[in-house]
Length: 152
Image (cartoon, rainbow, N blue to C red; front, side, top):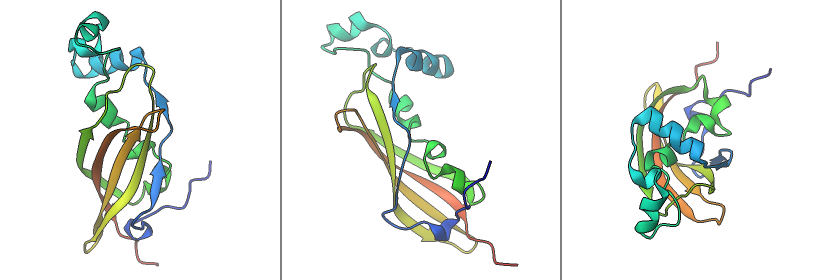
């Protein structure tokens, strides 16, 4: 298997965009997320509870949606192995409800590049849209990246 050319801090450009594969959320995702986190609020599991509150279906966990913005699942991930130092910060705003059966597409855009001596901060805007093109989540990530090593 051939790995793509590795990217470092200097290789990113403001406005550059990346995508991740779309995912259709299922009841299995909800159950596995609950098993991992212990979040068992009835909004996520009890259809009668949801309908009694005017919701057509069980709601996805907010943190489940935020996890879909994992940069490691994006098209840029394989080229970032050598340059990546750490994931420093994340924010997320949940704009629309997500229900079982919704198909979600995460996307990233480079919005900040802050050089440092041997590293740099890469800031990405994150966005998740549903099958109707509606934005259901928007936020940001900040990563610490290595600067390109000097040529030998």
